[in-house]
Length: 193
Image (tube, rainbow, N blue to C red; front, top):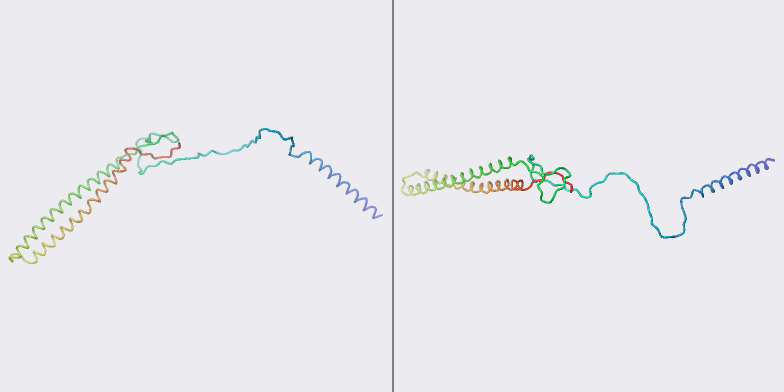
């Protein structure tokens, strides 16, 4: 009797599994996402919806070689600008003052150079006079040595002043170039085309 009972329970369980499996398979076939159709020509469309932010493909950074206070502004952020258009003009007072200072320094260096040339000529005359007087034993050897030392010092000072002059000339040129660039155009900010 035990065996009959086990077979009956097993048969009922197997029947339940088969019935539930058939219903599940039958319902799954109805929900198939694929649609079959005969082959024909037509358009394929697919819609994609999305959110996000647009970015510019190209952005251009426009800058100045020098910095300073803006005097005049000819364009605004995101304004359309053309090539070689002046966007902003910087205050040029600081640069003009630097050029004026460099010119004054150049003038002082030229004055020092002229003074050094005169000093060389003067010490050379003194040295020549002392050499002639030394030949006649009218001056002491120490006076001749002092004249020679003064002449050598004046020549050295002249050489130093000749070396300084080109440096001041270069300084004026280095200040004048940015000033000319500022006068022509001085862009300073981001501009998107």
